[in-house]
Image 1 (cartoon, rainbow, N blue to C red):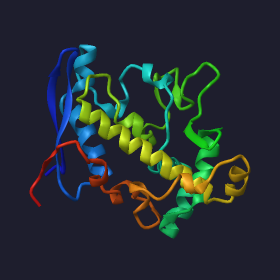
Image 2 (cartoon, helix red, strand yellow; image 1 turned 90 degrees about the vertical axis):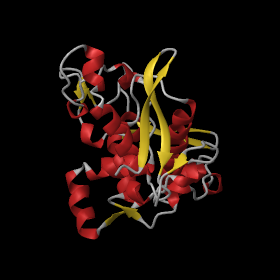
Image 3 (cartoon, rainbow, N blue to C red; image 1 turned 60 degrees about the vertical axis):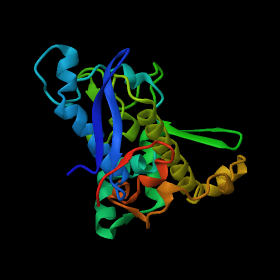
Length: 236
């Protein structure tokens, strides 16, 4: 039984979805599973393209969103680190990652932008503005299995106000948690010399789980992000 429930909604600008219910113990991983299942089950790609559905696993959507800023959460950095064979082999033996593993993933796939006391961590983009993981020849993502949360939860359709608010809360807190880990890494002194302060990135919902586990998103509870969204509570 799904622990997060999405339902089809018809808005003035087209069909989309709303998040309507949540189990008290639901996690970010449950939310991601619910969003991806909704679009897979509704054959969204096939309906939009007017052809037989081939599934999101084949990344057959249009590539317009691949030119947008793509922020990274701490969960994304973990997933990208695990896509590097050398890191994956060592981490699976150890059972957990370190801040240095996240740094390595950012060095390979990401960009760090610092302005004043704010750090923004995103996927690297080409000079033409495309995501660095976009394959123009095949018109799909080179690391689709490891794509970031913002990509996994974005679909070209309307969403309810609370569904979008939930998504943004998860994304923002996840990026803040990643910045916190980077400030605690071996490069933290360098970042501090540029004006960044660890106190500006206190522990939050993404920081409550123990260690940087391989299944990090499954340990992050959804409850802290639900304040004021009036979702129905599913029975325990």
